Amino acid sequence: MCLEDKKLIKAHIIPEGFYRYIKTDSRPLEIRSNIKGEHKKRSYIGIYDNTILCGDCEKLFQRYDNYAQSLLLSDPGEEDYIINTEGRKRGYKLENVNYHNLKLFFLSVLWRASVSNRKEFSKIRTGPFEKILKKMIQENDPGNQDKFSITITRFDDYLGKNFLLNPHKTRIDGLNYYIFYLGAGYKLYIKIDKRPLPKMLAAIALKPNQPLYIPFNKNFTESKELNILLDIINNNSVG
Image 1 (cartoon, rainbow, N blue to C red):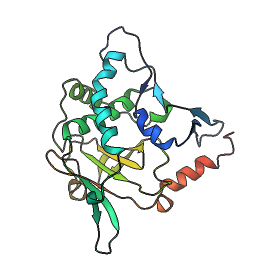
Image 2 (cartoon, rainbow, N blue to C red; image 1 turned 135 degrees about the vertical axis):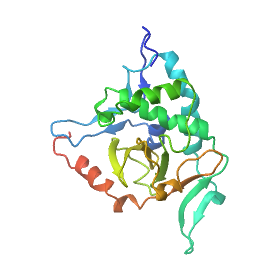
Image 3 (cartoon, one colour; image 1 turned 90 degrees about the vertical axis):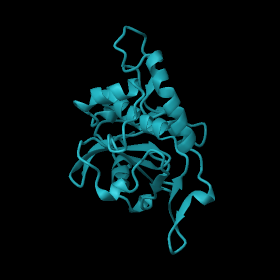
Image 4 (cartoon, rainbow, N blue to C red; image 1 turned 120 degrees about the vertical axis):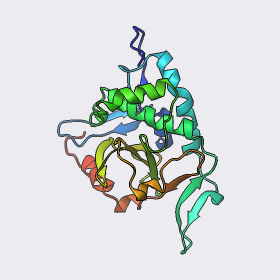
């Protein structure tokens, strides 16, 4: 990030706390692939890259990483849940969210993934937006709600909270988005498109001085992500 000649460190793209949420005992996490010939690996601290950040640059992210982990890895209170007419929990809203810190956390995850050499993040290449992201982080500027707009949903069932998949690019209503799976069930949508938000996503997008809405996804067993996970588990080459 700083382009200076300094010692590089083991830098997480997704902070270690999200991996620790999944780890329920002393055993390491399993990193599996659906690519033929690739064997599963083990890690106690999740996926990191030792080619992108020095210690000083890592400190730029620390405040944002700490805030996001404190906010997203804490259980919501009963008063935070959104209840439908049938009395079912459909998501929750969080009041008094620090838009500045949370938005810059999400942007820093995107930037770190876009410059990472890890194959898990190989589908994240932001092109001309990479320099814009870098400048926003260096200048402590989260931008307005439509610039790299953020929407976040969550799998609330046990299986959905205990996996991560590799991020990828997609299109929603013709707009370009990157999707990240943060762990703890969170599915993050980042718009990387200069056109305005679709109305459906604009209603729940992260905004300054507004509550953060986090709708629940379907149960993981009813989601398209299940087939991807089953493909990984059933890969005969994984030993």
